[in-house]
Amino acid sequence: MALRSVLSALIWDEFEHRGKVVVVRDLVKWWERRQVALYLLAIVAGAVVGLLVPGLARPLELAINPTLGVLLFATFLGVPFTAMGRAFTDRRFLGVVLVLNFVVVPIVVFGLSRLVAGNQAVLLGVLFVLLTPCVDYVIVFTGLAGGDRARLLAATPLLMLLQILLLPLYLWLMAGAEVVGAFDPHPFVEAFVLLIALPLVLAAITQLLAKRFRIARAIEGTMLAAMVPLMMLTLAVVVGSQVFGVSGALGQLMIAVPVFVAFALIVTPLGALLGRVTVWMSPVVELSRSAVPHGILSSCSRSRSPYRRRSR
Image (cartoon, rainbow, N blue to C red; front, side, top):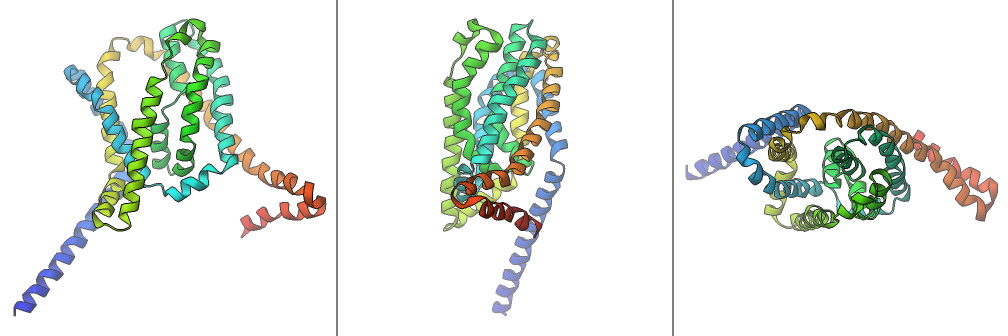
């Protein structure tokens, strides 16, 4: 009788555990399908709270980096670090990213920024936002959109270093020499250390511990499942901390909206086109590499192999 009671309790606990797992899994699927609407809701909620309770602006501003750090920790947990190593050796990907970010984008930004050149404050804001986008946010949104976070993460140190080195040059060319002296690299270094390096190291340690310890696996699973709520929290905190401060200059800020919209409409197809051209040219690159040591005939036969692999 006692044995039957113990078995019944164990079976009930197992069914209860499985039921909870199913509920959590369904909840995660639900908010992943509706993540865009949930993000918009979080932005609206942050704006309402920030406008109604302006005294929260400073505490919310102090909470931005910790909240974003937790979000990036969760993002990095979903990136296998072996894939990061392979991504860093992908020269074609790095070439596309560097050309797009530091050649194509500055040309587009220079042209669009002339629309707000009469207002130096708005001009500087536009240049900072478009020339040096927050790589940490980009990594998160890339992952949520189903992009290759591992490759982008591998390129992050190089991207941030080039941003620090090239931004003074861009400011000098597009806004004048007088604004270059106001450039401070400290926020870039701080962001890299606190929002990239630290969460990355913690994620790597957690992944290693997850192979041996159940609690590490639980942390990993919980953080990955909570990506959408963490993103909502981050958006609400950021908007809530800034909306009251900029509400008085909303009229000035609105003149920058067409610039941002035009930038998205121009750069998005340019990035897609550059990526497609790179993929299309890859057989040509293989042909040129193999033609020198092995002759034209052998290189031609090798250059066809990528198409045979894709057709399968």
